[in-house]
Length: 207
Image 1 (cartoon, helix red, strand yellow):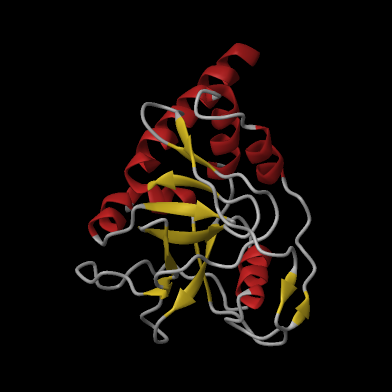
Image 2 (tube, rainbow, N blue to C red; image 1 turned 135 degrees about the vertical axis):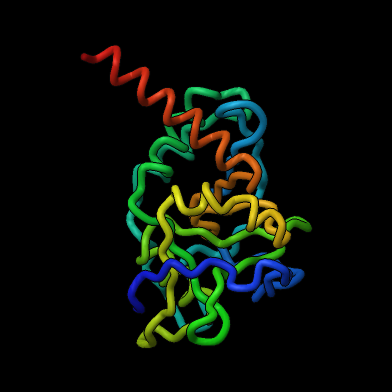
């Protein structure tokens, strides 16, 4: 796998090319997804079709182990579960990096995006392993091939959210082939501030 790079969309004026234009990426795992929307930590849900778990044209592919974000996403009961969504997004935004499959020519790579339910979404992964698993599962790379990847800190995505929105990116879908929860692009700074303030309050109470 390539070293992490901080390259977002190189040309802010162009609409990002989707490697899955008009179709959903191959997925498996949980059949429910959760997104952040509206004030603070509110959320909306979105169903994503799931094919046979772990099966590709290349044969059986081992699914990555369950993580904290998988558990928290599965526990969210719906848009009204503000506490559950706060825990999920605090964990997600506390990760060191968010990972993306790189597309485009070397030196001008962009994060892969896909049309999901008529909206362009960045395919976002909570680990390098999960990005590679998705890419192999969807025949983007072979099992023995290196994956070109982009790693950005959550803060970098929050700070550049308006740039992605202007490029036509409606949201970020996390681990789309596994837990598949999402956040609208314009809600990134809102939720970042909300979970940060909640964390600060919790810290103050424990002192």
